[in-house]
Amino acid sequence: MTTPRRTSLAHNSDAADAAFGAAVALNAEAAEGAPEWVQLLPAGPRLQGVDGRSWTLSDPQKMIVAFNRRGLDLPIDFEHAQWVKAPKGEAAPAAGWIEALEIRDGKIFGRVAWTQKGAAAINSREYRYLSPSFAHDARGELIEVVGAGLVNRPNFRQAALNQESISMKELLKKLGLPDTATENDAIAAVDRLQVAQNAQRPDPSLFVPVADYHVALNRASEAEKKIADDGAARLKAAAEAAVDQAIRDRKIAPTSRDYHLANCADQIGFDRFAAMVKDLPALLPDIDVQIDAQAGAQTVALNSDQQAVAVAMGLDDKAFAEFLSSQKK
Image: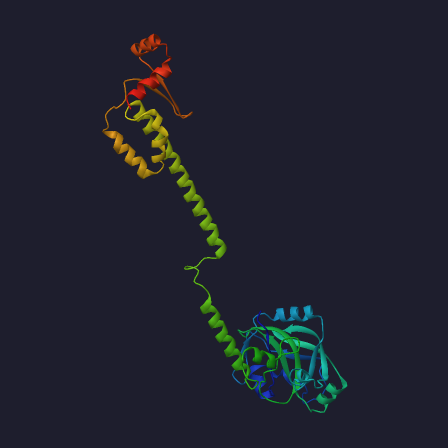
């Protein structure tokens, strides 16, 4: 998750007239005292600082929503002490508290309840200008107002990270940078990490998630198995038909049926058997051979002459047929 960046702005009246408007001056020449309503941010969408930095405020209403969602008054301190001194454990007293925000012509104004010290500093002209502190994302889009500071310095200042997020020192350590590194150094280090991370991301056109790979592999395996099973079933049926036909043609003995079927278990064996019996002449006696393929047994039927001989010898048809077959081996 990207940590929002906190920025504090300090400016004088001359710079403010061009970039932010004169409303940031807290004590006008009439010396009417500490104002109840103060301008925190100018109208967007582009906010230009006197030091060249710029930000974007494309939706002022979201600043109001963020303030209301937070549900806490925002502190106005002296010289952004909440960002500079508080992280070090030093005192950072409030000069006032922002109790409400509203939009006026695209500008963000805050209603302030000043402390005695804050009001006195403004009335005595010890401090004349207000520098807002706000959170923004890496693109410079403002996210929310997080406070403000009474200042007299005319230029912008970058605030330290607030106490709700990681300290700058700890962040630099995690990035492998020395304590003397600047925020720009930290941003550059983060950019390098993002580039390295993007470089390590696999090309989706070259790689697929492991889960998707296994699903596809299982489907392919199942399809291959089905094809193999269907092929084996067709080969078995063709082998049985070829062997049984060879038996009917008296080219092989019925008792060798299982032997030839075993040899026809693969395509190579089947092709060899088919080539063998193609031009093979009838080798067995002229008897009617009936194939009971389902039972795996062979029954024989004698012709009328053979049946007469069997009766004369007192043998049944089966015994006489077996006798004839044995005589031809």
